[in-house]
Amino acid sequence: MSSLINLICLLIAFVGNLSISQLCQPNRIITAVNGQLPGPTIRAREGDTVVVHLVNESPYSMTIHWHGIFQRGSQWADGPAMVTQCPFQPGGNYTYSFNVTGQEGTLWWHAHFSFLRATVYGALIILPRGGAKAYPFAKPDKEEQMALLTGIPAGPADAYTINGKPGDFYHCSAMRNLCEPIRKNETYLLRIINAALNTPLFFKVANHSFTVVAADACYTTPYKTDVVVVGPGQTVDALMVADAAVGRYYMAASPYDSGIPSGPPFSKTNATAVLEYAGGPNTTLPPALPQLPQFNDTDTADRTWPTVPLAVDTRMFVTVGMGVADCQPEQTLCNRSRTMFASSMNNESFVPPRSTSMLEAHYSNATAGVYTRDFPDQPPVVFDYTADASNNATMQYTTKSTKVRTLRYNETVEMVLQNTRLIAKESHPMHLHGFNFFVLAQGFGNYNQTTTAPQFNLVNPQERNTVLVPAGGWAVIRFIADNPGMWYMHCHFEAHLDLGLGMVFEVQDGPTPDTSLPPPPKDLPQC
Ligand SMILES: *[C@@H]1O[C@H](CO)[C@@H](O)[C@H](O)[C@H]1NC(C)=O
Ligand SMILES: *[C@@H]1O[C@H](CO)[C@@H](O)[C@H](O)[C@H]1NC(C)=O
Ligand SMILES: *[C@@H]1O[C@H](CO)[C@@H](O)[C@H](O)[C@H]1NC(C)=O
Ligand SMILES: *[C@@H]1O[C@H](CO)[C@@H](O)[C@H](O)[C@H]1NC(C)=O
Ligand SMILES: *[C@@H]1O[C@H](CO)[C@@H](O)[C@H](O)[C@H]1NC(C)=O
Ligand SMILES: *[C@@H]1O[C@H](CO)[C@@H](O)[C@H](O)[C@H]1NC(C)=O
Ligand SMILES: *[C@@H]1O[C@H](CO)[C@@H](O)[C@H](O)[C@H]1NC(C)=O
Ligand SMILES: *[C@@H]1O[C@H](CO)[C@@H](O)[C@H](O)[C@H]1NC(C)=O
Ligand SMILES: *[C@@H]1O[C@H](CO)[C@@H](O)[C@H](O)[C@H]1NC(C)=O
Ligand SMILES: *[C@@H]1O[C@H](CO)[C@@H](O)[C@H](O)[C@H]1NC(C)=O
Ligand SMILES: *[C@@H]1O[C@H](CO)[C@@H](O)[C@H](O)[C@H]1NC(C)=O
Ligand SMILES: *[C@@H]1O[C@H](CO)[C@@H](O)[C@H](O)[C@H]1NC(C)=O
Ligand SMILES: [Cu+2]
Image (cartoon, rainbow, N blue to C red; front, side, top):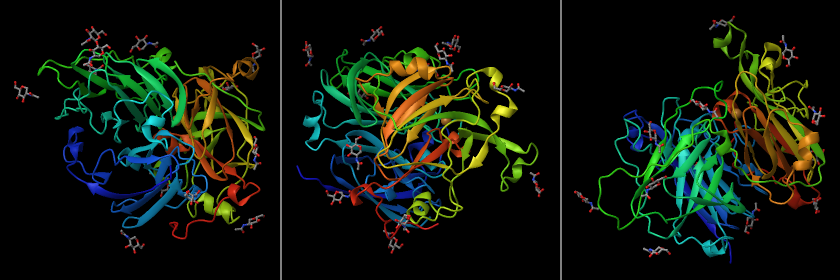
C-alpha cells in the first residue's frame, strides 16, 4: 500500500468558556488547540508523511514535541525548546513535517516549552499500513478506537481528567463524562495516554479486564490484567471485551505514588467516565465502581513485563533525583538561602541554552558557549543512594550545566538509572527522545550489577520511550544510537524537568548521507 501525506492544521489560541469551567475554576481562559481539550487526534498509517501546520495565536512562544516519533531524517522537527529548535513566537506559524516509519500504535503530541503542555496536547495514532486488519492481535470489532487521555491541568488543587473532563467525583463537575455506548460482546481497543504533568496513574474499568497489546507504540507479548499503570508520557494499548452484564460502569484513573510518605503532595482524587452498554434499561442507578488500587500499591504497579539485551559499547550509571544548587544570577527571589531546589542526573542539573538551539550549534560546529561534551558516565561519588542517612547537604549539592554525552553513530548504550533519596522519595518517568529503549530490569534499593545482570531477560523485550524509575529504586535500559542528532533525555514530570532533571545525547553522523543529520529547514524559527 502506498503512503499518504496527512496534512493537519492546528490553531493554538486562547480559549475561554471551554468545558474547562468544570475544573472548579469557572470561565478560566486556557491555551487550547483548535478549540479542543484534548487537542485533535492525529491519525496516520505507518509509512505516511505527517505535515502539521501550526498557527500560534496564543500569547506564548511555542514548540510541539511528537512524543515517541523517532524523527529519522527529520531531526529538526523533534520540538524540545532550545534542544532542537528555538520556539516560534506569538503570532507566528510553523510547519512540522515528518515520516512515521517503523512504528505502530499510540503516541501523542504536546507542547515542549514551559508548562504549556498542560492543555496543549493530543493523541497521535499510527495504524499499520494495511489498517486495523493488520494488527498482530485479533482485530477489534470497533474500528473507531477510543482515545483516552488522562490529564491534569496545571496547579496542585486541580482535577485529574479523562478526555479533558474530571467526571462525577468532583463537586465542581457539572457535567457527566460519557463515552460512546458500547455493544455487548464487542472488542474495543483502548488507547490510554498519560498526559498528566506530574502523576503516574492507575486505570481501571469496573467489571472488565484488559489484554495489553502495546506500550509506547511497541507491540508487547499480550498479557491479561484488570489494571493498567501509566507514567506521565507513557501510553498503553489494551483490548477490552464488552463481556459484562449490559449496564453502566465507571472507568477511572487514580494516582500512583511509590514515594509516600516523603513525596510532594498530590491530589488523591480520581477521574471517571461512564461506560454504557447500548440497549440497556433506562436507569438512574449509579454505574458500577471499579476497585481502584490504593495510591501506594507498589505491588500492583510493578506487575510489568520482562526485558532484553544486546552487546554493549558504552555503560553509564546515572543517578536521577532532587537536590539543591546555587542561586542563579537572574533568580533575585533566591537571595536569602543562596541555594534553590534543583534536580539532576549525575549531579549535573540541566540548563537549556538561551541564544541558540543545541541542534543548530551541533550542526554548525559552533558549540562554544552553548554546551560542553563532558556529561559524566558516573556520579561524582559512590554512596548509599537510597538511604535516608545520605540525605544531607553535601550529597544534595548539584551544579547547573549544559552538558551532553557524545555517542558514535550505532553505539549500543546501557544506562542504569539509579533514583536517589535526596530531598524527596519520588519516581521519575524518564523519557528519551529519538529512540526506543529496551527495559532490561527494574528494582528497588541500590543497583547491583553482579546480582542483577545475570537476571536480564533476553527473550521478551519491553520496548519503550519512557520508563518509570521507581522511588528508592532503579531501572536499566539499552538502546542503539542509530539516529544522528541531539536527543533530550529527561524526566517527564514537568516540575522536575524545569528544575534540571535532564541531559542530552549528541549522536554523531554515520558514514552515509542516510545516516547523517540533514541541514535545517530554511524556515526554522530563530531565537
Ligand atoms: C518521507 O517519506 C517520503 C515518501 O516516502 C520520502 O520522499 C521522504 O524523503 C521521507 N522523508 C524523510 C525525512 O525521510
Ligand atoms: C505564516 O507566517 C508567514 C510569515 O512568517 C506569513 O507570511 C503567513 O501569512 C503566515 N500564515 C498563516 C496561516 O498565518
Ligand atoms: C454474547 O456472548 C455470549 C457467550 O458467547 C452469548 O451467550 C450471548 O448471546 C452474546 N450476546 C450478544 C448480545 O451477542
Ligand atoms: C461487578 O463486580 C462486582 C465485584 O467486583 C460485583 O459485586 C458486581 O455484582 C458486578 N456487577 C455487575 C453488573 O456485574
Ligand atoms: C473516587 O473517589 C471518591 C471519593 O473522592 C470515592 O467515593 C469513589 O469511590 C472513588 N471512585 C473510584 C472509582 O474509586
Ligand atoms: C430515560 O428516562 C428519563 C425519564 O425517566 C427520560 O427523560 C429519558 O429521556 C430516558 N432516556 C432514554 C435514553 O430513554
Ligand atoms: C498505604 O497507605 C495507607 C495509609 O494511607 C497505609 O495504611 C498502608 O499501610 C500503606 N500501604 C503501603 C503498602 O505502604
Ligand atoms: C537580591 O540581591 C540583589 C542584589 O544584591 C538585590 O538588588 C535584590 O533586591 C535582592 N532580592 C531579594 C528578594 O532580596
Ligand atoms: C563540522 O565539522 C566537520 C568535521 O570537523 C566537517 O566535516 C563539517 O563540514 C563541519 N560542518 C559545518 C556546517 O561547518
Ligand atoms: C552524607 O551522606 C553521605 C553518603 O551517605 C555520607 O558518606 C556522609 O557521611 C554524610 N555526611 C554527613 C555530614 O552526615
Ligand atoms: C550498525 O550496527 C549494526 C549491527 O549492530 C550493523 O548491522 C549495521 O551495519 C551498522 N550500521 C552502520 C552504518 O554502521
Ligand atoms: C552486590 O552483591 C554481591 C552479592 O550479594 C555482593 O557481594 C556485593 O558486595 C554487592 N555489591 C555492592 C556494590 O553492593
Ligand atoms: Cu522526575
